[in-house]
Image 1 (tube, rainbow, N blue to C red):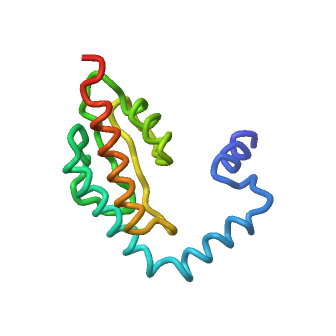
Image 2 (cartoon, one colour):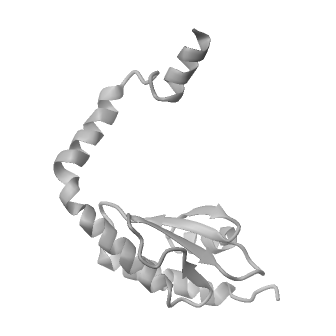
Length: 133
């Protein structure tokens, strides 16, 4: 019985205000499905732009979702250091390993944001590339 309760909670069964999460799901299904294509286009555009930044490479050149994984190629610095510098310029992402990170496009991110992101990444990559060598 204890194991069943634990598993239920692990799977979200202990959430008391499930209606709040359900409301977000309803909005997503009723209003956001059509605009998912925009998120995916922005992700592909981001990945394509990363290919042209010295020191960075997209893990997948043509992402199939709104997530873009990229590699930081400089052995002298880490993706964590890259993020620390981009964060000073207002750009945050998730570091997934010492050399990789993930960026996600979503509602509220438009083409101008992608351009700004690529500009910040290029500036920081130029700044960091080869430091400590």
